[in-house]
Amino acid sequence: MHSGKRFGALEFAVWTRRSIYVLTILSAIPTVLYFLGWKFVSVPWQPIAILGTAVAFIVGFKNNASYSRLWEARQIYGAIINDSRSFGYILRDALSGKDPKKVKEMFHRHYAWLTALRFQLREPRTWENMGTAQYDEYSKKYEIPERLTKLDDELKNYLSESELQYILSKKNRATQLMASQSKELSEAYARGDINDFQWTQINQQLVKFTDDQGKAERIKNFPYPRNFSSITTYLLLLFILFVPFGLLKELDKLGEGTVLEGWTLWFNIPFSLMVTWCFHTLDSVGEASVNPFEGSPNDVPITQISRTIEIDMRDMLDEADLPPAITPKNNIVL
Image (tube, rainbow, N blue to C red; front, side, top):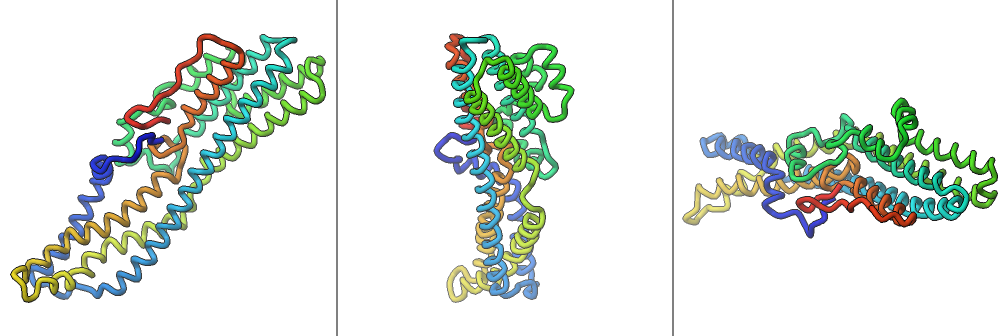
């Protein structure tokens, strides 16, 4: 997540520079051909304007859907924050007087669940963007914690060796950690360590965690529909290709009867670049938010949120040695 006021203008230009190079070339080719006498390459601008209207609608639709996916992902992790705090004090108050060691063990298992979940959500998918040059280059400005460490090493901080090996043998580690929590609670209930009301309360929290995990996995594993994504790309490409051809005649006429006659044609390059860059960048901005867990600077900061939850829960147990909060690097925090 970018935590600054805005992306800097130079920063934005550098991020889009590859598209600027390509768009400049695409604008220059018809301009040079027209200047050399190939007047027939000019096309009426009206059909292009109609195409541009269609592109504006579909790019706007995509950006709206992208923002919805991002905001839903943030709401999911907001719910995990609240549910974790509730789970922490309900569990502490129910078991601390009878088995404080078990409370600490279950707290640690919850930290392990948060860790396993964020590692699973950071796993790459074929439709995500972090592998492209544009995003890979920008990612050097910040750190993606899940790419710097291994899940095994992180879970060692929270689980016993036997439980660690058991969890690592499973496919969905986060799910199995929550199942282990349920098993521990069932055993505590069977021993009479918690009463019916406390059992119901704590069990409801586990159900909420499972629900939150499922919602996050749904966003992670179901991409923005490929049919909408593909038609947006194709229409945008057609619009970008035709804009420089549609402005040729209009800009050539602009200088008639003035000292600029014959030279205003070259305005086609900057004007076409400006129009096509706006549309292409709007699409790129939507694409940058459509996968809110992949690790881009616009994603939900699930690592920071997980650390905040751990600090809050450790504080509930009056632990003195709290882990440090995760702070932004170059205005980026994940």
